[in-house]
Structures are given as C-alpha cells and as structure tokens.
Image (tube, rainbow, N blue to C red; front, top):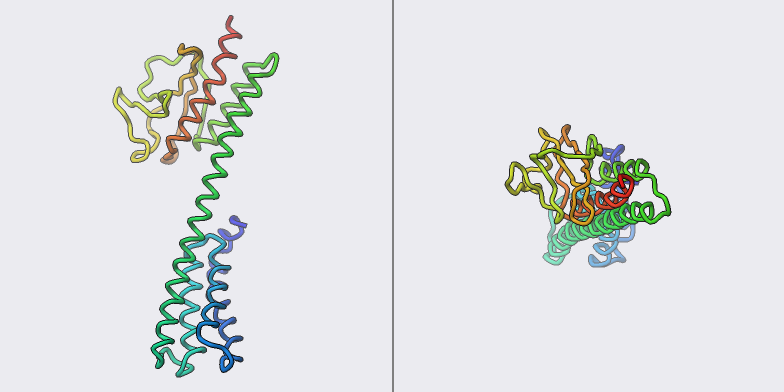
Length: 248
C-alpha cells in the first residue's frame, strides 16, 4: 500500500481533494434536512479515511478541501466563501481543526506501529542468530554470513565483513551501543555513522575480543538509534562463542 502511494502520490493528493468535494455535493442535495453538525461529522469521517493512509499532505488536503466545500455548498449564502451564520463559522473552524488533529493522530499511530514492527524485527534477528548458535554443530561461516546480512539490514550498511583481528580501530561500537571515534564519544544522532571511515564492531566472548565486523556506510548518512546499535552488539556477540570454539 505504501509503495503504491509513493508511486502515485500526485493522483492520491488529487483524490484527497476531490472526495470531500463529492461528498459535500451529495450532502448539498439534502442540506435542508441536515444540521451543520451532521454534515461536519460526515466530512470528518472522510478526513479520517484519508488520514488513515499515513500521508500528512493528503490528510491536510482533505481537511482544507472539506472546509472549502462545506462553506461553498452547505452554508448560506450558498455558492461563495462568505458565511453569514456565526454557528456555521464555528462549524467550519472546528471541521478544519479536527481534520488537522485527526491527521496528526493517524500519523502518530502509524509511527508507533512502525516502531513496534522494527522492534519485533530486531528481536527476530537476534533469535535467528541464537538458534544457529544453539544448534549442535553450527558452521562459523554460515553464522557469520547470517549476521553480516542482519547487520547490513539493521544499520543500512553498504558493506559488512568479518575479520579475525581488528588492529587499532579509530571508530568502534562499544558493548553499550555507544560509538567512539578517535578516542572520544561520537554523537550518532547528530552526525550519523561516519562515511569516511570504517566502523569496527568487536566480536566478544567472555569479555575477550575474538574478531570484529567491519562496517561501511559510505554512500549516505545513516543515523541508527541506540537500540539498533545495541542489537548489533548482541548479534556480533552471538558469533563470538562459535568462532572461539572453531579456533580451539
């Protein structure tokens, strides 16, 4: 649904403007039998339906369109943007205000849903790696390949590779998910992952480093949240015990 909206956004915005006009036109046919409050509620339902798609511009477009056609077709004098009844002025203002509020609430709900979905995805990734480790004879190469793929997807990397030793890395992700660059704390939220240097994610077992994933994010700035970096640490540590056993 979201990909369709992205490809056809211009048409969708046009539909968001036309649907309230069409509904207001239908209501105008029986406007003598309806109160202003009733017509406002019907138009709010239209705004809610459009806003539920999660497109802020479409929701705002539907709100403005509903307000304009409520004024033109459902308030006296009909056919122009003047409103003679103070109650209709209040209804018009409430319609637009409620439309904007509903749009923002719908967007907030979709953001919360997306966050929950991402958290579930992170957990699935860790569990997948843990299941591989728990298998009787996990192959180090297959586990490393699995975690490489998961790290690439999790952090939006251009490249990710495993190395048995990481000599004096300048950029390193610590166990708590914070990042150090050149010996100083580095603000990922502000600056994003470095694009001009490789990032080292140590692979540890029992506090001992047994290798590292080298991460590359060179083509664009990525700003993973701390929870994503902590998940990356957990994924890397799943590899530690298997790598250590294979060396033994």
